[in-house]
Length: 207
Image (cartoon, rainbow, N blue to C red; front, side, top):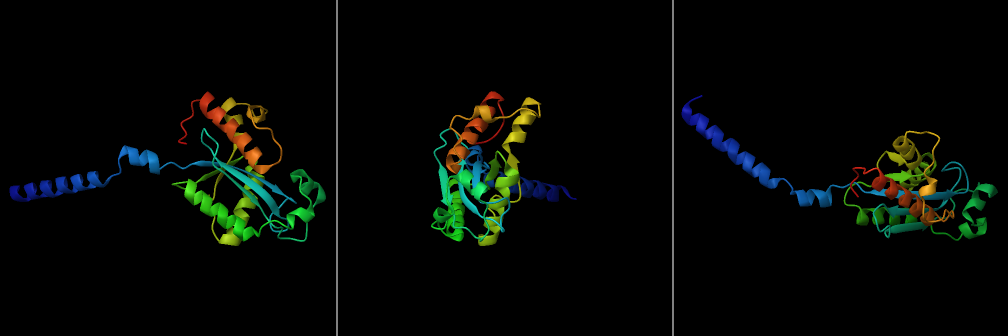
């Protein structure tokens, strides 16, 4: 390469570097737009699995100090099958659930709420994600064809056991809101416990 070509190459490279650098988002933009917010979710159902049985209610709260951003949904049953003992936990009767809103409408509203509240993909967390996740995931895909939470979730109980290094321990004493089986109350109580853990263990989690 001639000296002239070397100069041209340097100029082109530096120009590209300057343009690329100028196009990068600022730190302020990154902090505002790149967070993946945690959403604490709790569901109530009339049986053990989605499809054969129904999710009849769920609640969600954005995990942040105020815990004021909540969503509540009550869904019309999708099946003729239901288990009295399972439904009784929610405090609703079968007759009451039959007056609830159509699931597609509720799930569309939940999706819109998540889009409004979360700048990036929301992170699903619950105290029993093996149970709660299967219903939310099934209902999103069945009625809307997509799940805004993606394909993963976090278990708050396992998270706590790892932090305290003891698999026999339980986080539930950290709740402040009473566990009433109202799904919003229960989601808020679990979020309170999560926030306490973040503070106590100085966890690097962007909220």
